[in-house]
Image 1 (cartoon, rainbow, N blue to C red):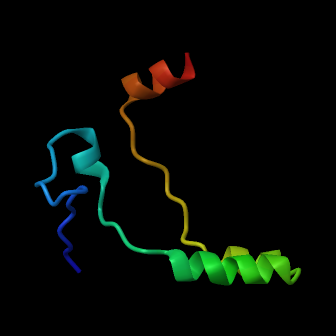
Image 2: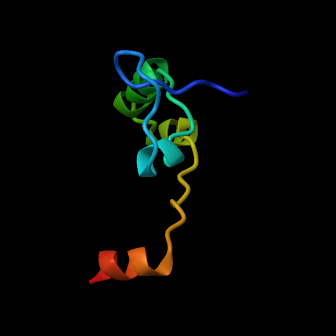
Image 3: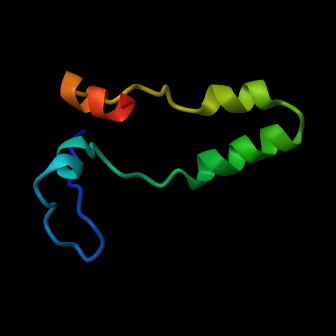
Length: 69
């Protein structure tokens, strides 16, 4: 599903790194509340199962070299 990504104020997204990386913004308050209840009730494994998969951001070798320096 294509979604328009607008910063606060409704201005068009700026070009550059952030504009290239942001794929969408959504309210995850219900997910956070549900996860909190599971952790509080002693079920952290079930809470972790609700979380989205983390994927590394692809970086060029020169960027990685600077980060590792």
